Image 1 (cartoon, rainbow, N blue to C red):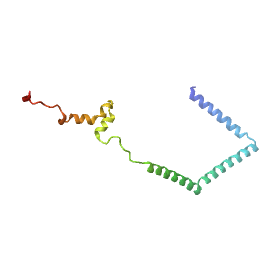
Image 2 (cartoon, rainbow, N blue to C red):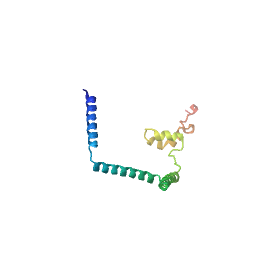
Image 3 (tube, one colour):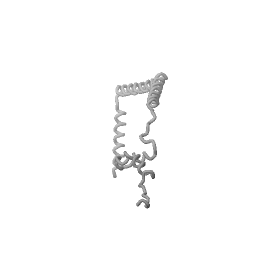
Image 4 (cartoon, rainbow, N blue to C red):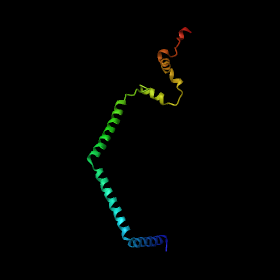
Length: 128
């Protein structure tokens, strides 16, 4: 016999033993068990009936609606246009780069310096 056959055999013996014990119960114990079963079934029916009361569902629905409205109002009132730290596309490159920021602090000066007007001046050879 393998493990599953042994388990099946054990379960059959346990079931037979429990069924034999139920058949040998006295009348008073059977009546007590029956009363407890009926009481449990009534309690379940009452709890189901209370769950289906429309007033309870109205209260739950009202609470859920109020909660959703409060959360929506919170997010609606707290939204503000975010001011981006960079207004031009070139600035995004500066912000996201890994280079040192010192170079970019005087970027306007470097751009001005690179214009033709401020470039190296050519001397006339006639003056030499």
